[in-house]
Length: 147
Image (cartoon, rainbow, N blue to C red; front, side, top):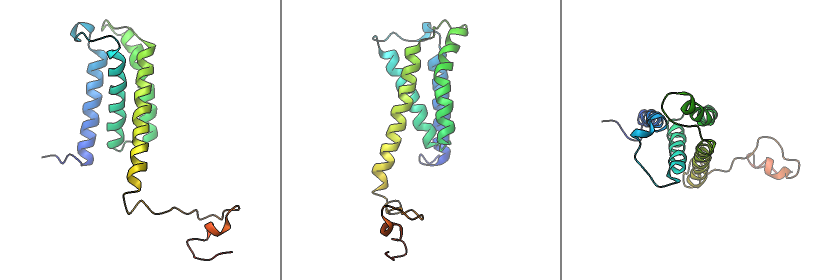
């Protein structure tokens, strides 16, 4: 059985999220169940948040992941217009996609800040190796000397 916390499991979740996004974004409207107005934007936001979170969990390079997702958001809308899937491009959907990416990235940063203080290996104070002009006594904290 696959360990749910292994990098392999995280990569599998990311791949499943990518496949789900293709199905959700490119299924013809006849195959999509009716939903209350505005739900479409929420689906876009959640979908791209999940892609971002699973991509980060899969340890895909942060910059590469974010650039790819930021490009995928508008390209998926343009593709919906151009492909014969009977769907229309909607700029608001692309904006909801970008909001999902931003929300997920903010959650990752917040989670790391919160958990950094609880992990003894990550809770140490990082002191610059370069001298600080405004506070020279802080620059020498590692060596224990003071000026």
